[in-house]
View 1 (cartoon, rainbow, N blue to C red):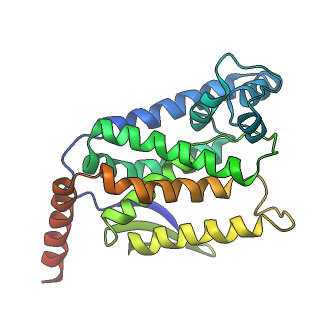
View 2 (view 1 turned 180 degrees about the horizontal axis):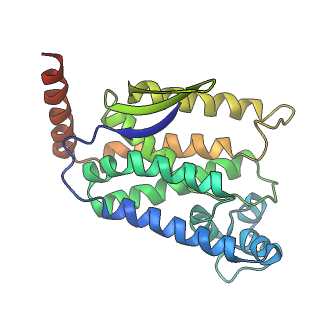
Length: 244
């Protein structure tokens, strides 16, 4: 179930912060792929969030020019491959604009960054001895999805479902699409405690869970109730008209 769009009725503001985040992530990734393999590896290990470094306060080689704690932020703008960046930016493009409109630009930026911090810390405390760098915007985007779910549970998300060779497109409620997604994160996270498999290795599922929980809590403090109700009312009116 791959989201490819959603109902944007009621959104008034231009999502400048969300688009800027997407552009920054893409530019950083293009810089990554321009590097020779050894330099890219040094970049990832220097600016990715490494649990053992953060827990012990010790900078493992290669040394970075910033405080270790700041790697929690820098890691949010690094990605591990084309599928990683494209998948993350697709989710951010679909869900972030409505959340930004419902919070305001500055509050949305702060919310996004705090979601990423909460995600990284969750993974750090789950795997305190790991020396594998965490990279990606997935945790922050998980927080955005949690906010979307809280504010627009009945909002319609357009999803692509591929059955064999047949692509099907459906509109489904956000509570179903995001609910299935977070359930899979919990199940895969629990499975990662057992014998690692191709499906569970290499993915920081507890960062996804941590970001989601962080977003689910913070949305109540960051949302603008009038903006939320404006979007809800616009969608209710449109869907009621559709049924007549």
